[in-house]
Image (cartoon, rainbow, N blue to C red; front, side):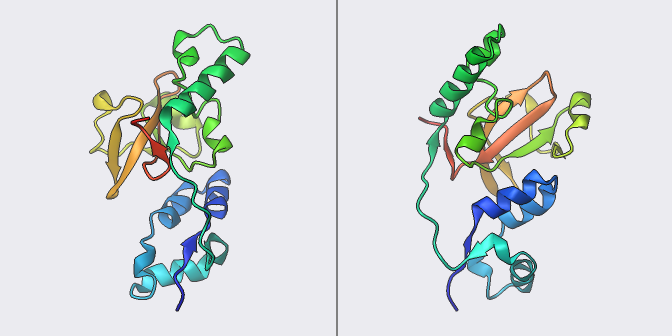
Length: 168
């Protein structure tokens, strides 16, 4: 049987409907186990639009500095007087990740984020005091780059390291 590839556009569309956990489950599937693992096979059967026999065009990793520059420009365009916003700190708040189709995971870090339907509870093994923009965290065995830590909204937003290069 042919190797299946993830259709990231369809996977991200699931997350946009508020079904973040389903999106996360599909996004973290190990496709090398497709034929051997009955649970992976079952997910593929249930969500066929999220998989394709055609390999996606290589997208590459987007430099974090480029995302910050776009966020800073968006803040200045909105005439923000926040120094933090103008520095490019709010990549998710200005929806810069959507321009590059970068899937994100948003975690709740306090009371303010309870209004965000898509925010997941912060895992206990993530030390919030060491999470800064560009730092790496491990979530379910995968590396993620911190895109935004917004203390005003009590959110922590991460993206797969396969899509964002924190060194550039």
